[in-house]
Amino acid sequence: MIAFSKSTATIAAWNLAGFGGIAAERLAKQVDGLTLIDAEFVTLVEIPAEADLITLQTGLAAKGLDYERLFLPQAATENPLNIGVLFKTGITVENVFLLDGSDDNDPARRRALVADVKIGKFDFTLIAVHLKSGRSAANQEIRNRQCKVIGDFITELREVNNRNPDILLMGDFNMIPGQDISNFHYLGGNDLMDFVSSWDLQERFSHILSAGRANLLDGFAISQKYSTEYIRGSLRLFPMHWSMNLGRERFRRDVSDHLPFVASLRIDRERD
Image: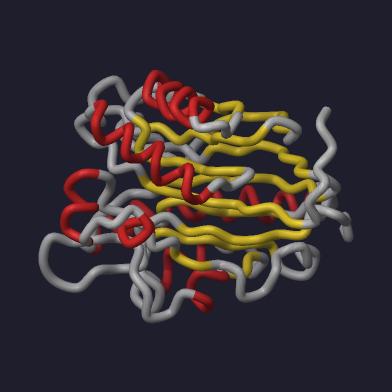
């Protein structure tokens, strides 16, 4: 185990826009973008196959950033979109599973990835999600059912088992703050989650559309009361298109149609 000399760690999440596969040229640009973030822990969604995650891992290693990977394949066999994690050496990731029922019992959708993580002295339960997309009432009802399964799991973690773990919930919510109220209601469990992205990232967007208004579809939440390790105000959308000297439309075409977000957490203490 490598001890962390830092007092904080950067946590990131990013949708790779992997539907239909990711070309080698785009994977190379994604490596460049992840290098700029240089996060200790990165949740990635829309990964077509583990080989793509390995390509990112190998590309980052060539740039001097050594990551381990976590990948559990979803059930879909046609155009699978998986959730994976890259984390730096020295971080402990255990008790990994996909949450049953969080795909609304439809193998074409994605189950939430759950893991117990420890970075320095800070340990937490990760819940990484990629919920059903779409703005119709039917799609919102599907998300309601997905969110209720995840919210019930959070309630069980915090209230039934009396563990009181810190929980980091992140990924592509496909939910718009202020519109998808029922989704947020169910996803938060028994009013246990603080949806930091809905507050700190107001008037921002993470999903780049070809036309019309862009939306804040990606989200970050942390359990209330116990999770004091989150550094308030640190959550931000990372302007990867600007950092890579790409226009927004070119970034959307060549890298991803989502911007990542990053947050900072204290890892020099555990205050559960």
